[in-house]
Amino acid sequence: MSPVILALDQGTTSSRAIVFDRTGRALATAQQEFRQIFPQPGWVEHDAEEIFATQRDTAAQALAAAALAPGQLAGIGITNQRETTVVWERASGKPIANAIVWQDRRTASACDALRAAGHEPRFRARTGLVLDAYFSGTKLAWLLDNVPGARARAERGELAFGTVDSWLTWKLSGGSAHVTDVSNASRTLLFNIHTLDWDEELLALLRVPRSVLPQVASSSEAVATTRVPGLPAGTPIAGMAGDQQAALFGQACHSPGLAKNTYGTGCFLLMNTGQEVPDSANQLLSTVAWRRSGHTHYALEGSVFIAGAAVQWLRDGLGIIGSAAEVEALAASVPDTGDVRFVPALTGLGAPHWDPHARGTIVGITRGTTRAHLARAALEAIAFQSAELLDAMQKDAATPLAELRVDGGASANGLLMQFQADILGVPVVRPKVTETTALGAAYLAGLATGVWRDEAEIASLWAKDRVFEPRMSRDEAASRMTRWHRAVERSRGWASD
Image 1: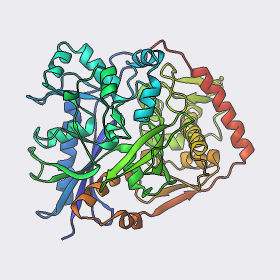
Image 2 (image 1 turned 90 degrees about the horizontal axis):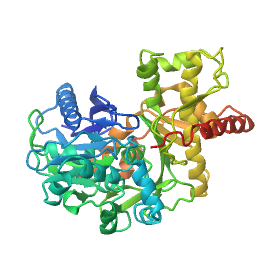
Image 3 (image 1 turned 90 degrees about the vertical axis):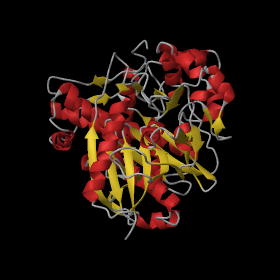
């Protein structure tokens, strides 16, 4: 009987579990949303116990729906929202506070202080990252400083830190494994991407005791086995990767120069740069893509903080749509935005601006502006932000991109994908399987457990669904980008923290 892999895709707004067969086909899927907690402006939190409960339950539901034979489940792959920070008690396994989400901006002033003290070049050279509240290191330091007794307990070895992959592995293994993979470690501001180890000098700068940190493994190896009620015992947890790196792998971007853009809560454009650490002159990040069989691949990355979350805000914040699926038809009911621009800097701006003090801005509103214009402006904003990333990436890579592979929930939106191709001027290629984040985690786990032989076999499974060819003139696209840049400038530097 053909073996299968269970992929756990723990995202910012929901937990999903998908069972994949050897052809990369999804046999069963389950999904649950969970609460978004906003204690004050700029703060975003999750209940880590709720994250685990929804992920455990969706895993059980997907396995039940797949109706597997005994022994058919070969392994589990985990992919996750990356920089979200969890600290828990080693003895009880209970979190000491809510998880601080990657979107959270409470440590922006701490990053400003480190930058003013001249430390950013050191962080940039060793981690490939910019000093920004986006990453885990300053979030961890904040928890140690602000949860009563946390720092003393951490120094006594009583606490454990992890990104969501570490938290899930700890819980799934019954507390026997405290581990992360190189791709998630590379998002913490604490990990040296050249030596592939935690950096003692950076730990000292952020006052993080090494005792709280997980062991760092490769992205494709058995790191633990399951020991949790409700799931089959003894199943290897054999693949781990941050969501964007997993999507790059799942899109079969295994060779240098191949790139993908994921349209999820945020937008993340990654280009494989091979086994050399890239150096960006255009405010992009250098990150570990994955490590397998003793070889480390790196990537250039551009990060947009708010993409699909802008549509979610139209639904939950403004109430102008009843579900995210309605946005395409509403946006298509008008021919254009009526010159309205929506800059969704709801949690600051990511690459290439890196402005934690920017805030959401809508400009160009007139008495003729309708909810349809706002819906279309929200979709176009996703494409404009991605175009900024691709422009920076092509300058860094010095090679033109032949096509852009896309995935994630919003890639199903044909209006958005066509506008993306129009603004970029290159074909946008949507694969048949758009759940490539989960698929990448499955592939990494399957390579470690013998379900697939190598990357070449995986690449042979990748197939196109639709290609969106650019239709807009380059002059028109440039004019629209100029208007976008004017709107972005109006969003900058609004919040004091």
